[in-house]
Image (cartoon, rainbow, N blue to C red; front, side, top):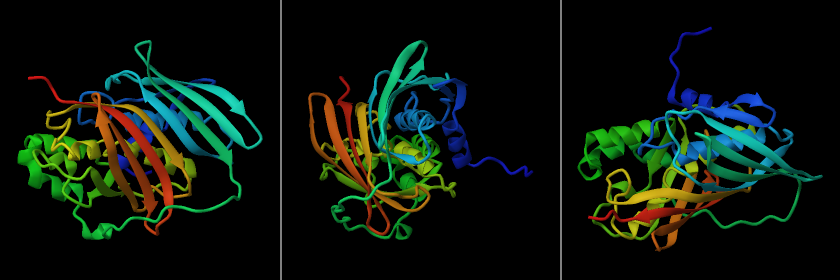
Length: 296
C-alpha cells in the first residue's frame, strides 16, 4: 500500500466508478470542478454510459450514444442513474439511461452496443495537424490570454476543470478570441494525464467525457465571442451524439477536429471527428447547444 496522493485522473476515474444501489440503479458523485456552476455535461454523459455498460456483456462494445441534457445538474448532490434494458439481440444490445437529481430527470441517454464483427471499411482522411508534442500545454498557453479570459482566476478555474486531461490547442484557443471573427473550425489534441487500464469501455467513457469540453467553442469563433467563461455568451449543451467507429486509447494522443456549420434561433450546431495519431477515424460527434447573447 502506498500513501501517494490521488492525481486528477484518479479523481475522475473515481467519479466514473459508480456505486450500484439496486439492480439497474447506480449512483455517481457530482463533485468535479467546473467552469460554470453546474455539473459538467461530459461527466454526466460518461457516467450514464458507464451505467449502461455495467448491464451489457463484456464482449459487446458501445458503438453509439444519443443523449439530451434536460436540466442543469447540481454539483453538490449525487446523481442517480436508472438503466432500462431495452433490447438484447443476437448482435446488438440497447440501453436507456435516465439521470436523476432532486427527484427530476436531468439527462437522458440511449446507447447501443455490438459484438465485434468484420465488415466493409472506408473513412475520411485525417486532416493536417502539427505534432502534439510541439504544442504548448493548456497550462502554458492559457495564462497568456488571462486579460481576455477575465483574469487569472478564470484561467485557474478552466485549468482545474480540465486537469485530468492534457489538452493542447492547435491554434489560439476559441475562449480567447473575443472580438475576433474566425472561421468556425478548431482543433485540439488530447489524452488523459496518466495511463489507463486496458478496458476498451473505459477509454470510450473517457473520450465521451472529453468530447463535451471544446466542441461548442467552434460556434463562437464565427462571432468573435469568448464564451461562457468570460460571460459574453450564455450557453449549455442541449443534445449530444457520438459514434465509436474503431478501437482507440484515451491515454494516447487523439486529434479532435471540430467545426460549426450553422447557428440560429439561440442555438448552435457543432460536429467533430476524433482521430488516432496514426490517422484512424475513431469517433464522430455532433452536438447542439444553447448559444445566446446576454441581454443588456
